[in-house]
Amino acid sequence: MLRVVVYTANISHSVAKGLAELVRAFPDNEWLVAEHAPQRRIGQLMRSQWRNLKKHGPRWVAAVGHEVGARAMAHLRRTDRQRRAPAPGDEYAWNRLVVSPRLTHIRVPDLHAQATIERVRSFRPDVGLSLAAPILKRSLFSIPRLGTINLHKGKLPLFRGMPPAFWELAQGEREVGCSVHRVEDGLDTGDLLAAATIPVEPHSTVRGLQLRLDELGVRMVVEAMRQFAAGTSAWTPQAQGGHTFRKPTLKEEADLKRRYPAWPRPNSAREFAKRAFLHTYAALYRPLPRRMLGIAGKQRVVVLLYHRVNDTQRDRLTVGIEQFDAEMAWLARRYPLASIDEVLRGDIDRRARRPIVAVTFDDGYLDNYENAAPILIRHRVPAAFFVSTGVIGTNKGFAHDQALGPLPTMTWDHLRAMHATGFTVGSHTVNHIDCGRADLPLVQRELEESRDALARELDVREPIFAYPFGRRDNMRPAALELVKQAGYVGCLSAYGGVNNGTLERFNILRTGISCEFSMAAFQARVEGYA
Image 1 (tube, one colour):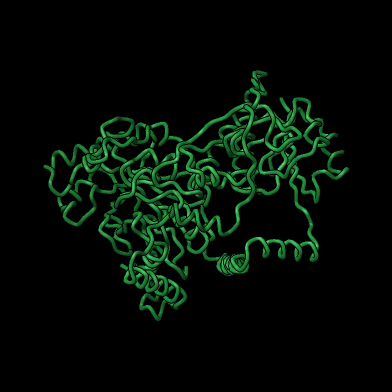
Image 2 (cartoon, rainbow, N blue to C red):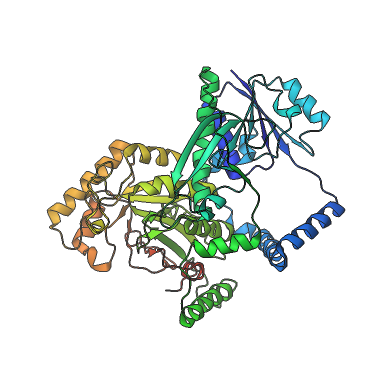
């Protein structure tokens, strides 16, 4: 058993997830979390605003106005997004984490105040861990018996300072990294305990890389603690050189976003006008009373369909990592969310003012596990994954990906982990066949074998089916009857549309989302614009 003191400046999702995974991995450890929460006076805030105004210019005024407006709107809409049922990611909620009997959380105005130092010293920590904490002084980081380590999201010694991934991308690096190092007097200068990198993909953005680094960092701190617990920590001195980077200006951030955009830029007056129209549609349509829309008494259910989430490809089946994160964050702030199981059971809020939104994925690509699931968990968005069971864990690939080569798919271990987290896993046949054209005996065999694989591997007893390709002519009545006979409790299409009023359990309409959608187009689509 180890006593671990954790220093942090804010309980962000990545910090909470890291702590939750540590507590889960080491249930016998004792944890003291010291959160730096300075109480700034009006004079300090005004001086800070003035310094930022001089540094950033008029951009700072616009940034502050946008932040204030976003927080105000999120506060006003907070009741629209409450979920009655658990969602993936609930286990990382801070209010759940602090009830752990072995974790103590203190909020202090100054980590280096004498009272804080005495509190940490009385805890008698073995190890110190810095997660998104301010720069620690020797009076604090020297207290733990085995020293204090820091998770730095950057390759050391080349990229000290902040922010993660920004300066690597700005300088054209081909990879970004995370480092776990011993805390010393110099900034990010101590010996290395662990280091890892991820590649910069053809369509990477700063935010997309940061999201991936968050997940990498969680795994690295858990592994570092395992080394401490086993007494196998091996330290490597940092190489000479490197550079310490500062926080970029708003202009530098805007310049890099133009170089590495998350969405395709409008390249004509027509495209500008189209986006302006879609934005106006979503902004004006959303507040209208349902009786004015002619849907009084009818609850709209919008089921979104995705396939891949990565920064390697850009095509009609792919969305970027930053794009997907922004879309899920927008949904979580503004809409009541439901799992596809709740939709099929009718267990949704019929009185909700806004459309009920459900998120689904088809095929079973590996990036669903690596990129999509962590983002869904971050925003607590329930989702369903419909997989072709004969392709899972193989190198077969899909016929529609021939131009790209076989793309990696998830394994059953990945699906087991996701299912245990609370995600739904359903059938997409065994080999992604066209149920509208294949011989009926083959359709029956594919339905039954896929159903049996889900029951055997994941203990799915009420399977849901999403038919491949998803157009109207890809599912004929005789094949749909076989779906019912095989024991599936629902069937999903993919030819677009919104489910209004009474739901057809065996024709749940879905609308596809791809990288071609601007944020305005996505918002309008959620509101029903086709």
